[in-house]
Image (cartoon, rainbow, N blue to C red; front, side, top):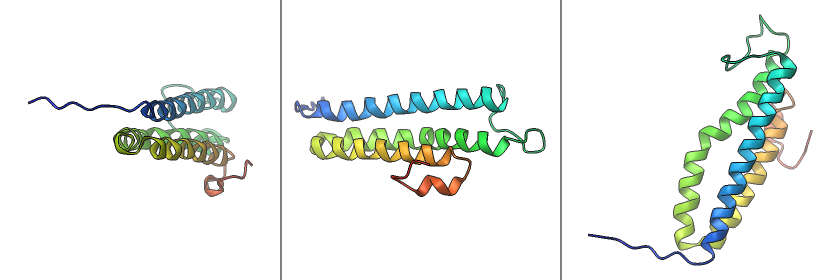
Length: 124
């Protein structure tokens, strides 16, 4: 039994919101790469150890901000794509809002003080 789903033209906004988040995540990965070079944390090390690297906390905050976004990505993508089937404009708007909030989350976390990740709207 085949099920067909008809997508409205507004569903394109949902796809754009998803692509925007993918680009944001790519940018975050570039920031982690820069932090690896700056704080001398080389692959395959996932997180720096404070006893071996004086800048471990700074690097780990950058890495953790990106890692948390990766961990949430499947749930965000599924919710965005499925919710967009019924309410594409609302889903796309919320998707863009989420991507912007994730940007500020990452920027705050990257300061080295994990509490700054909660200060949405304040670029530290």
